[in-house]
Length: 251
Length: 233
Image 1 (cartoon, rainbow over the protein chains, first blue to last red):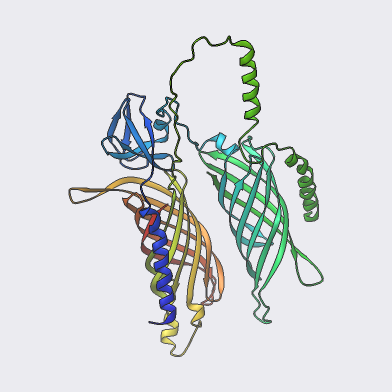
Image 2: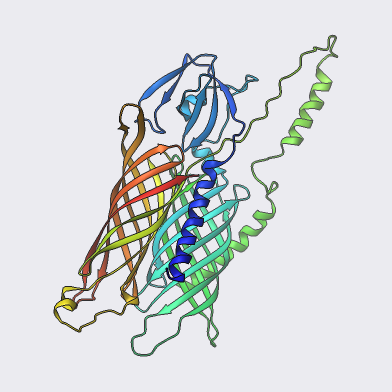
């Protein structure tokens, strides 16, 4: 067995252990909620298409095990486990009689949320761009954003990485514009056939803006422009324009 | 025009800076709740008469444990990839998905395979179109998935597992023959969920990119069939 194969096998094993670790985590405390409607329907799976196989009567309680998208996996007093929808869970109460509150993927969530992620297609300095972004919001107006991109052009391919701030001007509006500013790196791999040009990595800075459009549930569209300034080691700096349109969600 | 745009955006960012400073609560969704509560207390002191009987009811205090969201799915796969003109070869890779709603999920994939010899090379004797390194076929993609046909799969009398079909479509890049090509992918899969934390997938995908390796520029279809296992977090 070669050293490389062994290293590969070890990495695979480490990955597997990492993957299985959460499945083996210890027992934990669950939230208990009480049914106030005539009954609570339990589905076999986390989706409206899965059939109802059990109902929990009024005043009985269920333990909330975990959540997947808009469905809650619950366990009844008799140990029956099933999936309850977000809409039904909203009508349950806690032991002190207060309503069970949790974050819903709705328009209010679009205004104020913690995380965003999305994917884009677009152009970077004339080349085709594939890009993904993620952001953490400090408040509805201000977010820290990171994005990575891969551009594929006629004369060069490359990878970009940016980190910066986004300021959302009207977070409550369906069409909500934002401004961005930040720093980044770009790795350029020229496609030279005659002269062998070396790959290079340069620092960049950008300023830009765009607009978000709330679609439905947790989804929104995001169109963005960034003006990149590339600080080269030569006498003249370069610049590149980035236009992109993408599909994103918040959570 | 571009310089103009840049100046426009820079000045817009500058104009927005005082706006940032005016944000009162930096760490989220906690508007001046305390101030309001204090004001309410004061108002109550003035209007309500003093209590005659102190009720001796112990209020039940509920601590609400955080409900875990398990929307992330990560795993490995192995299968067969047919690289157009270069034969079929094993492919392996990693996948990560985030389930947004019961219908939609985002998925990122990174896979690797190795191309064989074209028939031209086989027939031509000593002709080598590509070096060994260039035959390495590495791709990544970002896709959107749509679940449909939810159902259940049964194993004998006692075991029922939820299942679903899904459609996939996305964009990415393929590094092959010394160049990275913009690649469009689409496909479909079948997912069986034997346990809350585990899923088994059978997926068929087509990866389409433009190639001019064999003289003329053409769209190549690279079909992939694979089986994978993923774990939910």
